[in-house]
Image (cartoon, rainbow, N blue to C red; front, side, top):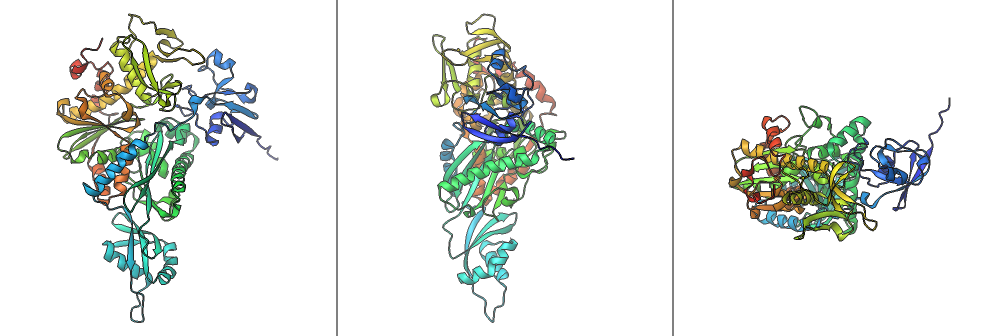
Length: 638
């Protein structure tokens, strides 16, 4: 019996003018992903977040799934959930502006200056300039009738003498081309080598003294964004930067949902290919702009959380979300980048900053390295609020760390009009002296949603002005902007005038935000209590990541997310994941230090820690049940 061919359908995406051919029965979300179009889908396609709303030109050309998350007006306008709508025929999809991924707030330019400063410190201060990949010029005596040393042994002997290496490795292709290259160059060559444990790996060999060029990439493989730097290995300078949203977002907003998606759909290969493609596009774009041949990029240094490193290398990530929460590897040896599909020199090496545990990865180790907490006599607190809330406490003598599932709400997850930082997102919010609303959007564009820093501002301002009480509930005193909506009480941020959609924050949103801030502060409190550290003992707090870089410190203290301490002791440090990655790339001593940090840091598993839930419940008030912890907020209305 001849099987009938499955009909292919054309899906057009407007206003982008993009189209893709997919098999009949493909969801609109999958079609968008295949077309390289980002559509917000926090739940990873489960149909329970309602974020992937799009409009279609004909409802008859799709098979609609559940509609409980759609209003009657949306249904009348042919709005559907992309993850629950299957293609039956050629169809046109209209994607709202708010769905488009924009990299306007991905930290690049500001961090470039910070990274270059770290570069100088690396060369002149704590870590000497000693890249883990470098070119070595070697002049050898040619063989004679009195010296029959083989070419490979002759080269290795010279390398041992100049580089002090006891073990040297070279691939078959290197050996196949070696004799001809040595003869044509008069036995004068530049050898690019990479450190692989105690061994030297030969990456390439060039004729003559060509040691004035050499490049590598430092990459922050984040859950939400991927940021790359192109680094000149001759002087340590960053010569170009590039960033993009992580395309895995289509499979889930956080990495736990992505693991679930991959398990249920046997899609670990797909998740790896997506992130590798993102990295390749970033590197290719930078190399093209600088007219650099990809073959001249000899290494890539990756930093990221444990799950993202597992996705990148296609390690088994399933146990990261299951007891006993054990990753496949924390310390990953250098590997050939080509084994992962990352396109640099075909013999180029891929390095990963080591992690600590399933929920504290190399990005946090990189942050400790970049901020130099491990060198300080005083006690420092490092906080990275992203998809999770990772916290490190300590000094040069000890370091403890923990991770709280706290960040998603401040990245727009679980918030009705929440979104990532992109053009049109409300990033600053305050009440004027006359009680009027004042806000600022990214890019000065019309408001389409609220990003993390804006959500924090709104929560703090509503509390400070008595519109919500210490439990986060709307007060009974009344406010003309508080009303009953589809989901209960809500506060109107933007009114629906002149074509502008209404933007509100609901009681459910506030509850989610309070849970998120409570998770962060509870993690901090557990670490401080376990080490008998009080707020007065803290010398500094370092806030890392995109969200941390834009939040208002005073308001973060007002709601009880951060300890109440002098604001001058709280420092924004930007993307320390890539800062640490570049530091390691430029110093073998820094590489060893990163390994030492990862190996010596004490990890607190909050999921099994008996005091964490108690601290979490105490922190679910504004700012806290214990007001003595927040003396600066005593004048806030209750």
